[in-house]
Amino acid sequence: MQAISHYQQVISDYFNALSVVKDPVNLYEPAAYILSLGGKRMRPVLTLMAAEIFNADCKEALPAAVAVEIFHNFSLVHDDIMDDAPLRRGKETVHEKWNTNTAILSGDAMLIMAYRYFEAYEPETFRDLAKLFSKTALEVCEGQQWDVDFEERNDVTVPEYLKMIEYKTAVLVGAAMKMGAIVANTSQENADLIYDFGRNLGIAFQLQDDYLDAFGDPETFGKQVGGDIIENKKTYLYLMALQHGDDVSKEQLKELFCLQPENSDEKVEVVKNIFTTSGADVQTKNAIEEYTLKAFDMLEKLDIDDSKKAMLRAFGENLMQRKV
Image 1: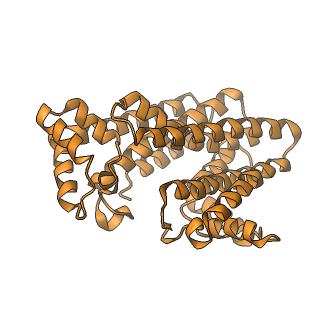
Image 2: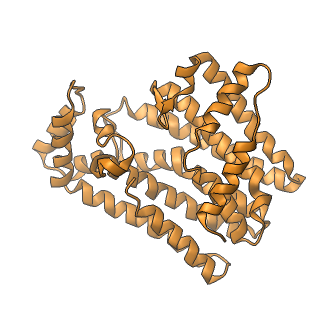
Image 3: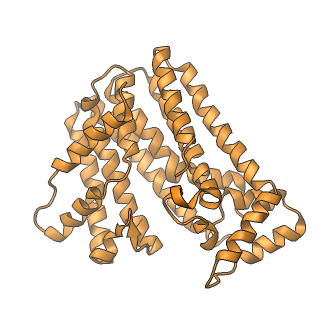
């Protein structure tokens, strides 16, 4: 197992050399555009890392890693349409740069492109990868639909919210790691454990995103602090505040989440104060720790060297200490 930067370079070199543009240009150019925007590319990095954890050369897992990254970017193209988002990674979103119809069709093509990368493997490995990929892709869609549904509901429960972020975000993290395990041809038990490690870490990561959106440092968070509050998103913080706050603060919170003031600064500060006084901030940090520890429990059961377990634990700890 090597440094994260090594795996990032392998992925970066591949996409820098990748040429997907052909006729009709308006189908393939948007795909090339979104893939060129980069980002941290942590999901494909996890696929390469997992392959080497189980004693395979990481480059054997490169086609699977590329499939994961293309699928992730396909989902971003469609998410941006649904959110009417103008920017992605500081650049114009695909539907803004071209148009909505082109973005939809180009996204569809990316999903099919992702599947084709599994053709690089022998039939048994191809079958296992495609089966996991299909299951995960459908779960991501289910998570996205729940997220949309929750915008119109005022009775979302904590278990429902956790299931939504598990499907929308965490299952792809778990699948990325399990794909590396499949390519390395490790045991079924190891493959399942590394999946659960990634899935639990993915839930912790999303909960931390909820927390940082409200309480992160504006200089390091990388996006507008309080964005979820401004958009009236019912995050884990919001649900905890409703569960643990007093009657006055709960009614105030519900009223504030029905408003879209032109200047949101006061709203953000009042909501953050409710999150703090109700203990929602502490409850959220406790949940982040709980799911991180669940991930680390999976490591102890893996049939790998202790040194590799330590490296995976350090990776998880580093991820959970982020300020962005």
